[in-house]
Image (cartoon, rainbow, N blue to C red; front, side, top):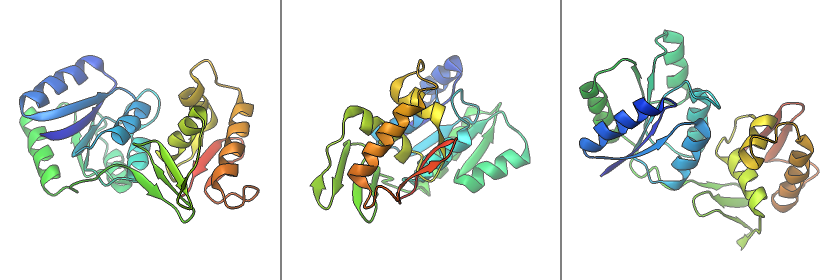
Length: 224
């Protein structure tokens, strides 16, 4: 079966689309937020992603950028945004197609089949390799110089959040919410401590980081 990830924050619409796509032979995984979408994409072997842009925790454009950091799985944007500028931005960021709401199911099915056909088979499990270490997101493993790197669960969650958004600035508040929970929005000292620990374990020169970069006052960026 063709495996799809469908991302939309409207639960009723998401459920209806899941039922219809499943009835047409697709194996459907759903997500209601950008964070859940990136994590689901890391866990599942997908043939395509159907993505709404208006998500509660981040813009769908940032989800596209996050996915394109490590996979070329076909992405079809399904959005109520009709403006040409929105379409151009989504396509320039890496989306393969753009369908506006409201839409007909036959049209979406045809575009899905076309995307999968010309697609990038075996977009695969996200494994990110740098000159100094390798990160297997699905297996939750890190290797440096051929040896496993031991990370605490919190260190891993922080690293995963950065890696799934490789090349993109991830804000401090968002990282705190994703790693520690919604009650933690201002405890930026937690980030400083754990970022320092990750740099000691991964960076060739922790004092002059090459991969885990700080954007002062804003957040952090992982640059592979």
